[in-house]
Length: 490
Image (cartoon, rainbow, N blue to C red):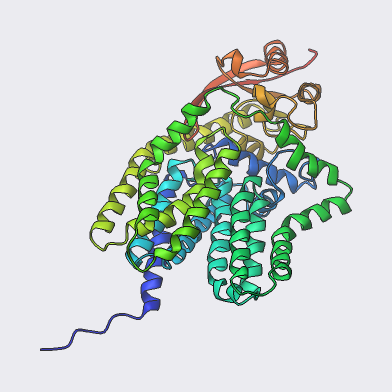
């Protein structure tokens, strides 16, 4: 009887798993590729990135509360071209790389089957929570997952009282995640505290090495702060990062609990699998529960810190939850079956396979751009409400730092920036835009009543209604009114 052939080298298994994760990322994000109307958040980031190539500065000339790391990322991606593929393909690669980090972390706590299923679950869940294209956490989740992996690998050195290069890089990676969105501070803080606790196990003085770790974590934001200070614009950075977040109203639509319940309803299989993974008492991976529970709790605090509970707010929490879920899905048969059902649930509930909707969105956006360009080849464009990708596509931007129209028309955003919102709209209208885009039949209570009457009066008195078109954002469809041939004062 012939002996069984030898098992393939581990490196080939790892390559096969990496190929699977990359292919699955492509499968789950295929429908969104090339869609310039997918999610207005990322359309703003890309429009801002393109506009920064005109020599403008974040927070000074283009305002938002997001961190400088996000502006830097989209500035670099905007240099790749004007198509949404310029950020969607890198986002796909970031998602696959994050899944690989999840798989690698989970291997410390579960089987190869559980680790791969947990990583696959992350990719399946991203579109369900609005992360199927270029949302912010799709990028910074990689830096946080990498930080968690590196700090775990640095555990032996830390327990000997040494701050290895890997530990310092872990803190720097977590700190860089904070430069995308400030709520990443809670996960980064947990990783720093875990590293400090590991240092205490050595019995040596932990303060000097812990200080080095803290400095590494602070360094990314400190570097951005020094750059803005050198340019004379540190007050603008401080205002956007701190003051504006304190001015921001949480629960603006008075449905906080309903939104939180919706998030839980959408993600209950992932939460259940993670809870089972954390509670499972047996197996050789029992010692990892404390780390995973603390990480998941820190991620949950990050979600609750800004309690608006929009779908994409849950995206950072998916990383620790999917690592924890991998523990529950470790059985080669039952774990694989339960994982497959959970993945299928995410794909059915989420928009990953809404191919017809996304095809219609691409066609509608192309037609909208073509119609505007045919009537006004060089418009002075003002998208008061609607897809901000049109700014890039038509090469026209209004003269205001408030490029994100959410800050202009959404009532709770009124004067959230350091600028007076009404004064900025008046400045844009004095620019005499030749094309104005607004929502049709939009409820007055969902519009800023200090700005909306000005814009709608301008459109009614000085413009012609060209057309009405649907805009199919990933979770909602709007009707746009395009007003053109505007002749202010005429």
